[in-house]
Image (cartoon, rainbow over all chains, first blue to last red; front, top):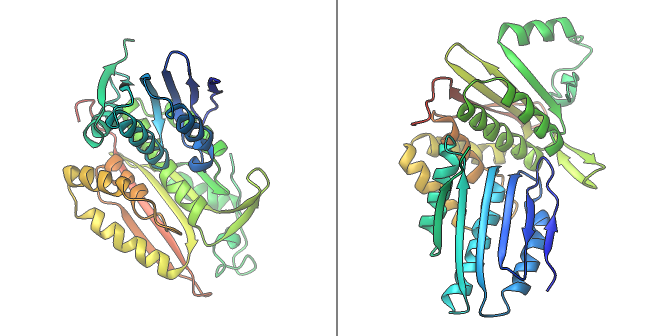
Length: 127
Length: 203
């Protein structure tokens, strides 16, 4: 399966999904006006990727800002991965990175960690 | 910056002939009220990214700058998706809402104000949402936000749910709103959200 790469812009994050290593990276900012459209290729890729069992997936979020519409998309991603894991298909880990002074980003990570049943690590970035 | 000055365009009841536009008066008003930034028209993500740059340069507190920007984005994207006045966006190849967003400050707070023409029934719905949100404390807002995020977005939603909760959470104070009836039966819907300048990292 091909890797998925989307180059970042000021209002879209970099998407770097590696099909071989199972490392899925999302970083930057996300406040696209039409998040459903922007994230559609990401969901298509994930749907395809999660058809194969036995994967060891690490999802790295390193966001500095995202809007509420993106926040829905992230939850949908977590739901897909949670389902994959709960069906015993594979193992999923989420690493949620935040700047030490960004209390809001840390809290956002904590909220997702409470809302989904995934191994969730909150990691303060070292400056 | 998208600083267009045609008030008649957003306030149909204020005809340009009755009250000729004066850029000096406009400038003086902004200066008097310490408004540092105004964007009017189609407030797209490209314009928001410029506002982000500008906001990050100003408040010396990074948390305050981030919160201000989050409020600007949510209020602007509300306008973008739900304003009753639409313009065709060549970039998006579809109609998008227009309105106005301003950032100003008082001694103690930064303020973000937004305004757009809305259908009266949509404005009434959002006002009800806003009244409810304003009764919640920060922990209740956190719960309500998560609860609403879990629900699928309503078809033809007027946006009053998760975006406004985010505004309230980032602001930490009640959201002020105002509904001004217009002659054509629509209303002009205004939101004002405040962010204290004295937020510490520990908050």
